Amino acid sequence: MNSPLARALRSAGIDVIGVAARLDVDPKTVQRWMTGRMPYPRHRDALVRITGWQAHDLWPTLPRPTEQPAMSDEVRIVYPHRSAVPTDVWARLLRRAVHEIDVLAYSALYLAEDATIPALLQDKARGGVRVRIALGDPDGQHIANRGDEERVGAGMSVRIRTALVSLQRLTTTPGITLRLHDTVLYNSLCRSDDEMLVNSHIYGRPAAHAPVFHLKSTSDAGMVATHTKSFERVWGSAKPSKL
Image (cartoon, rainbow, N blue to C red; front, side, top):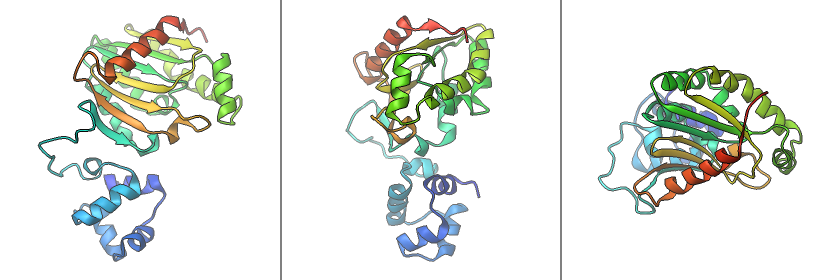
């Protein structure tokens, strides 16, 4: 079973028996949900809480409301942690790019290890999209500090060097540029034109355990614009990768 609900439950580390016990339903009912049957609304709400996924990610056929929640015009989805983001969300975002793609992270290893992403970035660049990737300098002081914060020591630099194996070779494609930065990152960013996935950073915790916000720009003074300006400052101080 590879339905969105099945993937979400696997990501959350919960099996059919555990879900059935929490929701007080028969395990066969849970299995039917995982193979496509739509749960009752109260059960859908409970599954959203259990998995951390949004309802429309679990059940894409759900009718969408005519009005979005009013917390912000730019906020589309909030994921409680990066591992709750469906794996194809990153690729779908990048495929929509027409003009620009920007990636800002320490290692972005989760993107580098996705078999579809490097080829997708090359295809976009060949189609005229400007692609800029800013990763942490594995020899930088701030990267060493971040490794100490997460209690992984040199593991942070190792992750960056591993990502560079996949991402640096992309720079042979015209339109793709990779630089290394040594800055304190409060967020990692993945931008596709006027859309952006923002992974916040929490002291002492891996970025994979921190929330991700899916934003879509609605004005030149909104959150996407603010994060884009932050990217430009880091990019301006970053150096070309020669590893």
